[in-house]
Image (spheres, rainbow, N blue to C red):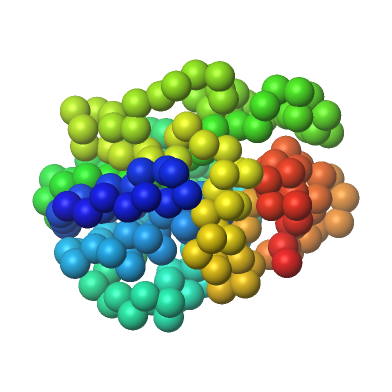
Length: 213
């Protein structure tokens, strides 16, 4: 087990094999990078192709994984991707239980962060349904489900995440390959870029002062 201090945020690299949910967003991509950089054990990367997102998250996740391989040199990974009409917590955790049982996953990492302060999100054009589980005023346990699921970013927001990216020189090397957009057919399709309108794009711009570099 390794303990990392990332700009005052503790990240534990547990002995494995371990699993991680990777969406291609800035949160899970940073977590994947540190897990691949400092783990000596097998890493199972789980992603879900989401029809509601036109499966763009699969392409972005693959790009992020390739970039993390280049940056860390770690090939001791397996990437498993499943597909659904619309991702839900059941989709994720049913899949997790399967791999935990069949691949003996020790700890499962997820990259969820806290929302920006309410006075910031009140200025966003659109809303998100993920308010209760990401309430920035609530202090959360980083270990869940009998210490089998680890959420090290759950008490920090995108501003702090951006600080870690910058401290480890990962803005140009990793962040630019991530995507945090929930475009829903309102306006021109941004492709694999960012619409700049949805709640997630606005959160990204607030945290990193940009959609992309």
